[in-house]
Image 1 (cartoon, rainbow over the protein chains, first blue to last red):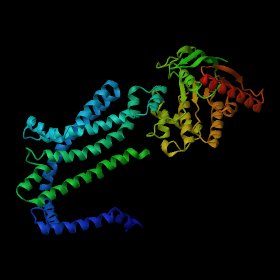
Image 2 (cartoon, chains in turn brown, purple):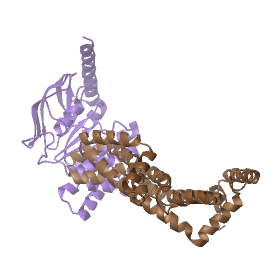
Image 3 (tube, each protein chain N blue to C red):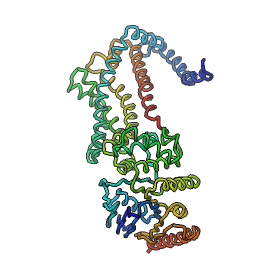
Image 4 (cartoon, chains in turn red, orange):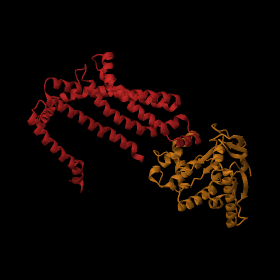
Length: 256
Length: 250
């Protein structure tokens, strides 16, 4: 180790107790797998082997890419509309009331409703999972933005009035910086939801994506591949969380 | 000297009348301290003068032009609130420079002016700090620097040191007094501390209990001994507090 204490940091990052728990789980898993058979519960070793296979063939990128593309379109659209809703809520109290009610309804709607409707409307195409992702993540992101807009400190806006900052300047210097943390928090939760929901929607009607390949693996009785793709999903989630959202949050909090 | 600020017959009713009628005038370069029992409408009066709130009756003239709430006045007014109201995501220098933008000052000059006024407020070397990284006293000083940077015709201060401890308060009083002497601005300063008013004001306005009127206008020119002045003002404020409580129970 180049730095003193660097070694200990590295060990701390590994969360040693967690690692211990995982070893125990792996041991129990192996036992159960041996007891019930690979169709019901494939062994950890076969899952690792399967992961190696899709990495070697590049299949992992095809399906992850297809899922991510749908997520980015659906979730990106949701973020775009959510920002517009936040803007409307900021500009007019009447619009805020409407936005609140619409979000309450959307929040209460089940994923399955959107999956069924999107199949009816868009058939067996990319747009079915995209639409589902859009409708499910919209209320999550928009609720956060609207909350952020409502929490803009009125006293700071009054300060802006005292010094005659024009509306555009107040928006740029006061409203946007105070709403941004809410937007990022909403996007973080929204993206996690998008990944989970789009995969469910992919079970129906499309021929690529993590959801499709998981369901397909089940049908051809390759249970270990179901576990492999679940692992891929978890990795995608953790990596975007660390690389994207944590980095953005840190950047936003630099003045704290 | 020229009359800078004219407050004539100003009153304010919320659910109950808070300010009955208040009239006074302030000359350019005066340091006026506004005193009175809690809840007598000192802050409200200051907000009316600053154009942040409309008066129920009466008028405020700044350089002979009426101050209308919500309208842009031709004269510049700086306000220091009870809280610093700095934008936490901007450095102290950026906070000061921001309020110079609407005045059409070019960017390089904005930075120079911000530096100069932060220096004047004793914050040289802290220009690049975020408000969250400095003490409450320093934040309040930055807020004062921001108010002075626009070279206001009138500077309104609403208990600006209320949140500070006794030691910082003393330091800030001296600082404001020094800045006032250096810049010659007209200052209207709301406080509930008689000692503070006597220490820094040239003119002391004592307001009565709610619905308030102007009870006494005192020139703090050293002709009356400081200790006696503080005593007199204390007696007055206790009378007003009693009257306000009596009024509430009646």
